[in-house]
Length: 197
Image (tube, rainbow, N blue to C red):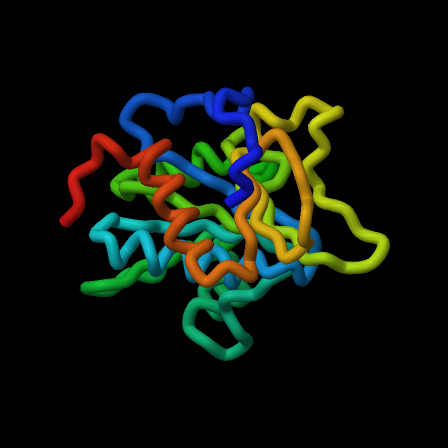
């Protein structure tokens, strides 16, 4: 982590989650920056520490049911707008939105309410606090721009670019301990009062 980052920057006071909701942190970045890898690794580290981790992923045009499968037939032959797949240990919902995409906060409230923490891959336009993962690609800069006032929403940057200085904590992907440090950072900010299993 960049020790030169100010400790009392606006990013140190993210908006609180609504009462009764778990904290939500979005993992954002440009295409192929490593959002999935960071979400999975950070989730695994927090799970290892005893937290109940849940995730959400924002995507475009993905398909969860396939022609010929029962769920596909319910929707495409039976005309169902939405189908719930439910079993003793798993469930899923597939279908179409009522009018427009549901906000992340509503997804959390409906499906992820009993998490200790939710890691949401993508959702860069959502108001929830964010961690950006940024790979040092020629001609590319982080999405985070302190001049645009994003510092209240962007908590930290995880990068392999050497020498980057920002008014938020910077975690070095080349540092073998960065994942543990990032989990410590989230524990300190969001999970102090949560009891691990």
